Length: 316
Ligand SMILES: O=C(O)C(=O)Cc1ccccc1
Image (tube, rainbow, N blue to C red):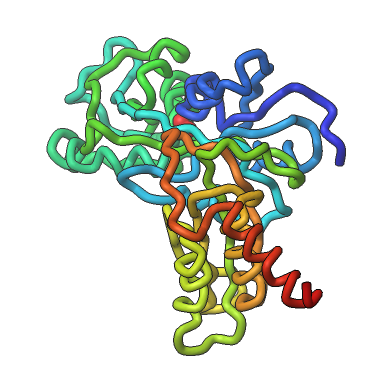
């Protein structure tokens, strides 16, 4: 489907960390942003061409991958990672005006926030149930509207971004309650599958690799493709394929752009040894790091080697 708009989706409602990430992405400064209630809905709006892109959380420095997003990338209709952004995240416990901490009976938040506030929760609200919602701002909204949980008790506090309190007329009961005060979340901008943004010299590429016929050394074969071309991995993670017990694929992120010769060679090697490889995109690195390129691994080195081979074949 062709893209027919300059609107971008984010995991909403308003006041989510995803909205903060979208507002910080340089390529979205003049874009119209629209909230979607789930990661799936935001990404589907990209697939159908309703929006030009979607900003969703992918990875957290404490909790690891956001599996709902990762599984969309692995199993859903293909989309492309076009940009990434690292957002520092701080969590606030918030409630309706007049509610004291001692009166909190039911907390609601997003699973990533719950995982990062466990120490504070176990110390300060040890017996209080924590329900999980689709986003931190949806949790704040549920508290503001006095929504009831499945057991009928209303949610009376949410863990969300400080800005969510302003949006939903809530007040902070405790600030900065995360276990790690330096926690970061990696957000990605997803666009329709197609040509990746141009190489900048500080890029990353993401792929999903499926082993061909389970056998000893299958993972080593995958890793070799990168090692022998001097391509440094930034993340590798296994996820179930969704097709039977014990069947896993590998999500592999690495330094470089698909247009870099060493990355192209590594991708071709990967394609030869794997049953299937899904290309998830090449995009500028959020940390701006320009990694050194190993000896014999520059674009010129690969070009000279190809010219040399051609001369052997031509007998010139
Ligand atoms: O729920 C949100 O606001 C999100 O954007 C997802 C999330 C939740 C917790 C930490 C980082 C991102």
